[in-house]
Amino acid sequence: MNRFRESFRFGGQKASTSEASKPAGAELSSSDLDPAEGLTEPSPSADLSACPFFGHREYDPVRELFGPALGQVFLARRVSTGRLVVLKLVERGPTVSQFVRSELVFHARCAGQPHILQLLDVFLTDTHLAIVLEHAGAGDLASLVAARGALAEPLARALFQQAASALAFLHSLGAHNREARLESKLLVPGAAPGDPPVVKVQDFAYSKTEQINSDPNSALGSLPYTAPEVLGNSLRGGGAVDVWAAGVALFKLTVGRFPFERAEDLAGQRDVVQKILGRIARAEYDVPDTLSPELRDLLSKMLQRIPEQRLSLQEVTAHPWFVKDCPPYLLAPGVPQKPLWSETELLALIDEASKRTATGLDINDLADEILNEEEMDDLLDELDLEGGDGLDQAAR
Image (tube, rainbow, N blue to C red; front, side, top):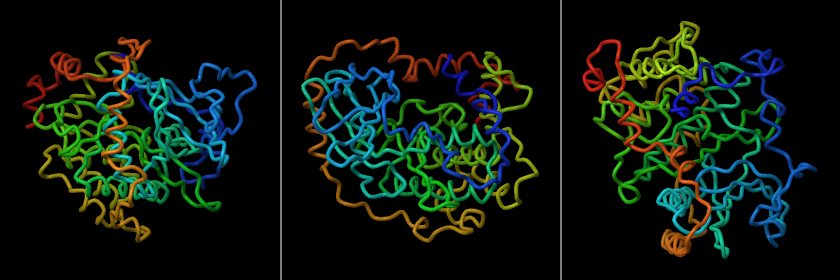
């Protein structure tokens, strides 16, 4: 439940005084883009001896980024090139799950797509499966909005165009992302001063295709981005769900809050979660008059309660607000490049990695990180919508 409360914290993270003082439309500089992510040297007090790759001949750990339930993640430097990379370590054994399998297969399928985080290396050690990913050193869209508040429409449009291009590419592969959170949209500084940051989509652990994890039978994903039909148990995945989530993300980029938050909401209270879920189920929100008419039109058509009445992703990317000043390469999904590893090679590697028994896995931490269907259903059973008719009726 704490996870739900964190997801619905009103207004996002608290910005510092200096960050909050910047006008929403001000030009971005490199200092606005989470400089901590660009650190190239370990802190003098950092203890990296616990890193399984400490002293590795090819990868030199710089600092630990975080330690999720499914593995440790380090910022590292490739010794042969000096390039900063992200080193994701999953202990061999049961922790090498279907989610790792899904993530690696999707990264392979997305080789060469400029707005999807690229897989650079993958290999086994005696104790771990090592996944080496491209390093995006400027934070993510969530931290940008937390620091700057609502973004000016030209900047928000440039960022959204890139993210939508990545989503269109996934859809061209027959895939649905199911993780549209702003936190999963990483940033790389623009090539020249004044250029918008480059968006890099990550996190394919819960993505679905007809071949990989083909039954979208759980309500995984971040609740603020969840579509009404998912709450109503009528649909768990698909293109319409992705469009809804993209609409929520665009709303937060341009308004600075989620569409179903209210100023009177008090973060951390149980009834706040119930109220927000009720608003989602009824698609009850207001688009501020401060937005341009074109953007208000786009948001209202992406956040339609009935999936069949929602714009398709193709219609989103053809909308007048979207196509304005859009680089031509973003209007086509692109052609996948040949990956460094075939899916057969990756799946064989994963099968080998899962043979050894992992130790030290805390099942409580794992359960806290992964929202399972039983937990979701228990929460939904407790909801008391303002209309009193339940989620299923509200979603109809």
